Length: 180
View (spheres, one colour):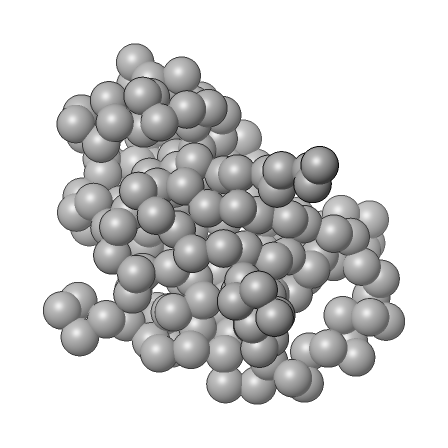
């Protein structure tokens, strides 16, 4: 019997104001990620380097490789694996033309309102995606996601959970969707 792959359940919203900044920020992480060609299963593959904002010591650095399935109704399979800095640096050139850089703000879970959130983040994109600000709120189950989508936090804008063009892989490869 094959083991089931981990599933991430989250909603995504565009942020068009600064109301989210009234929430308590737990930490800020700078993220640089690039996308590799999909594997044989069709899952998107990315590599990521991240570090806590302001940490020049390299103690908070993390290098990951992730395989992620297509998001359907707010859920996607996701398998993350730690990699070394050397592995990251060997793979990075293969991501030319399909990269994203952003600052990720981890908010206090109360930012999700009445919904039991596992994680509440706001990503502020840089580079070619400068000006894009997007929230992701991860929850434990589809019922919580449905309630969240019906009544998102007041600081959330347009729900883009099901708009494929707003996945990080699509943004990295194609830029902002034409409707943006």
